[in-house]
Length: 283
Image (tube, rainbow, N blue to C red; front, top):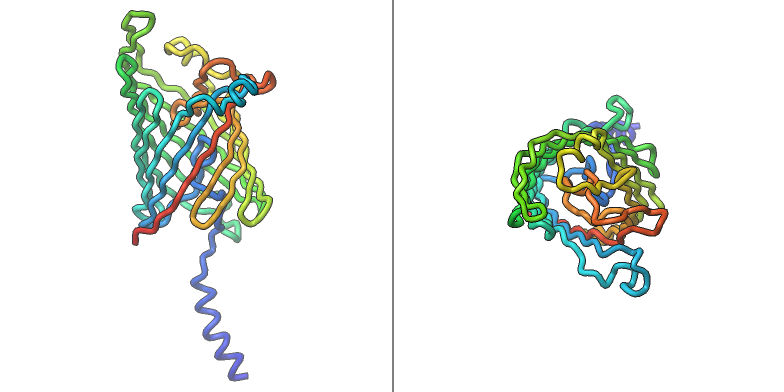
């Protein structure tokens, strides 16, 4: 009896200190193009490298797009606290730079007293290519729920504020006015093993007609941006194989549906690519 009492005296305080929130709603801080509610721990640095190749519709001649020079996205994120992270990134096309911050308001609790996880992402984009300079601010809510050990879902409504700029079009400088556009993204992941998941991702703009009237780029993807990927975790690395109907990699361009031509998946127009992340503990 004394042993049982002693055991309980030791066990109860330990159990009281155990975390009550869910873990691993997603297996990474970002899927194909949309960030997730996952945060870096304090003192953790994340290096991410993403590539997209050419249009697979080119067939075997261009080895389904793999012969085409890929676009590259390089990103560094750092966990200031367990709930705050800051990041910088560069996208090779249009010489785009980004600064970002993400804050976690709360996590889903195991007892469902808090049924959702909620974070907010803010990213400022600077497109610096000559005669194509552009600035925009993305603000996005990340609302997620883990449904058991296999399925997680996330809703990611966003607003993009595009600032006035001058761009060269057909030899003439045109003023592109400031404009606010809004839409949402939807993500889901399905666990198929301890370190392997499949994920789906879709996003679209709600006021697309207004956006097209005030943009030099008229080829936004019809039906939204869709991606499917396979996520593998190996010793501090996360590797994602991705099929998407956009080659854009920075957050602003990809979720708004910018395309490089025909992006109809049913006609065989899609891009192959991958994301690779590595975590470093700097504590």
